[in-house]
Length: 234
Image (cartoon, rainbow, N blue to C red; front, top):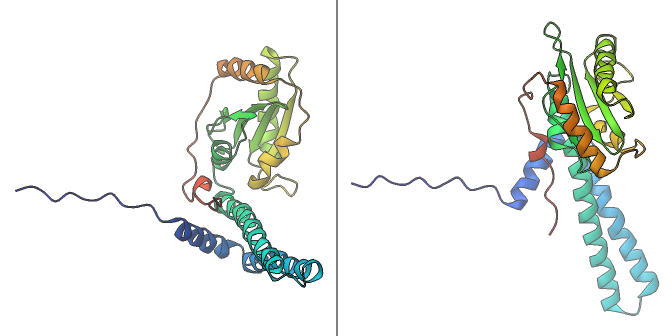
């Protein structure tokens, strides 16, 4: 007798995914409801005003302005929801060992390369140093209190300069310090560095740095930021 075949579990539809993202975000960001209402209401209101002023005698024109306002509101709302959802997801893993690795795994742009595994880890405190390479040079990210990660960062910078003396090295601090960089601001901060390397040089530098060796920390358990972004409208 043939065994009954189990059907693979279907992925949730687009609307259900959006609702799940909204529910998750609302638990950690109570202002998201009012932000989404504002994102939808403002463009619709602008469309109505423009339609009345510019097409008061043309019903079709008025309708088109309103439809345009609705579409613009939905688009802006999805963008805001996506950013807030990403921030909420990173907030859930903030402070855990390996949180920076989760950001480097899912959030880096094409002009940057980085590993989810740290290049240096303190066995006693679990403080870690991560490395990324891009058009802005080399970025070393300290995960943990600045007082403890600073010596580790200085040591890693010396290692980089030993084999790449002409490549600039920048520091980012992610930890409990008041001036530390939040997880969701790591990638935007890296994008602000002035471009000093070409794409070919980025690849060469990245390959050269692989000789420095790596240690490993697992990415913290929890919500994967890659799975909480709002679906893009087609």
